[in-house]
Amino acid sequence: MNARGVLRLVAKDCSLLRLLLALYTATALVAVALAAVGPATRSIGVTLAINVMIGLSFHVTMGPVLGERERRTLPFVMSLPVAPRDVAVAKLLSSYIMFLVPGTVAATALVFLSPVDVLAAMASDGRSLLSHLIGWALYFALVLGAWALCFSVVLATAIVSESLGWTIAVIIGMMFVLGNGLLQVAPHVRWMVGYVKELGRGGPALPITIGVEAAGIAAIVAVMLWLQGRKTSFV
Image 1 (tube, rainbow, N blue to C red):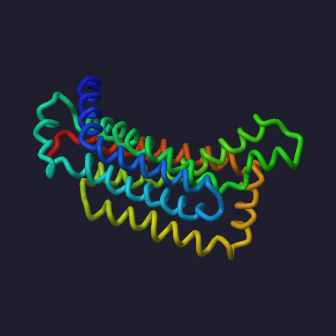
Image 2: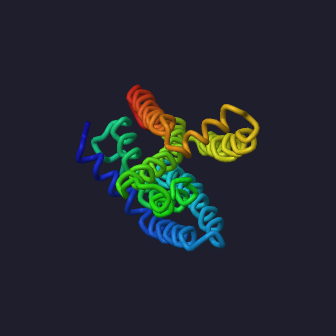
């Protein structure tokens, strides 16, 4: 692997989207502020945070990944002594950086939906601050991991297929069909209701789910790199 070439490609991608990322990060900070103020503005903050996540998924995949020809940066990529797999690694690194910086801020707003209220819980029982903060951190990892898993599927599709149509279809399927479907179905399925309650109590389902999310992301990345490793040219 050409590490120097990979780093140059990562720097190029992050530089091209720096203003857009700054705007997304600022919007995510506004979402956190609205969610933290109180019940009156919490729903607005959470909705804004979700929109930041959705917007990031579109811009990060359609800019650096699918926009090389549109931005006329493909000749620069092809001029470097890099293989298709090196480019895939660079796209992974830059895309995760660009997604996770504002995405982590936005996920903080979503955590205000958590049933784990550190200050209120401390007032009602005698557990330590550290104990409650660990629970809050696990819920944060759960929320961010779920979004990162969906983003990984979309990103891998964009890198492997290099198709705008397939990428949009996966985004719509993951976020609007699957996501909305789960929201509609979950309240009517007994085991799903029990599962959500178990997550809220911080039971074994919480760390297990986080582990499944991490394993899913690792599997998607491994398959994507394997497929890109089979390519011998950029044509």
